Length: 146
Image 1 (cartoon, rainbow, N blue to C red):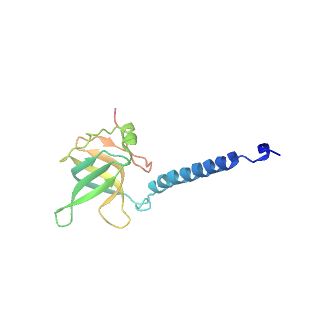
Image 2 (image 1 turned 180 degrees about the horizontal axis):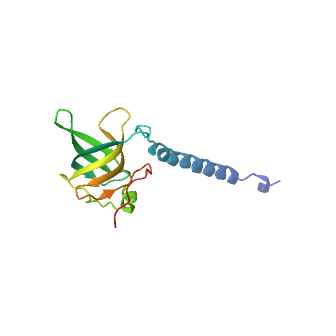
Image 3 (image 1 turned 60 degrees about the vertical axis):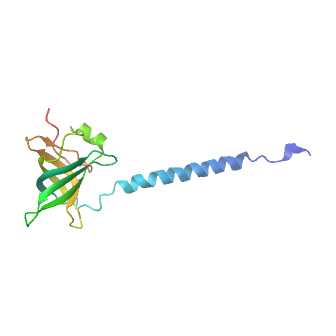
């Protein structure tokens, strides 16, 4: 009997590659699943708030509006409004310079469940009356006016 009867390690190599591929796929899919949870928001409620833009963050994976809203005492409270990704907002008429610090806007949000000042974006009305949507939850909201 010579070397012809010695098994080759190829099947083991294929199974190691399959295992590495399966683990990599699982690891890459976990953040995507966790990323799209809206458990922190009261999705069955909405709130309309008016304020002054402090900052508009055009970043991935989600854009943010930092909005200064007068509190009960009259002092401004900063609200953090989570939006969709820039790619989704562009399809709804948004641009990186749509909002500038000092702009007055009215936004509709799904408020945070814990009562902190913030929420998930539904729609916005700009000072000139332009209505823009772009909810990350797919809520029906105004389409950009042409």
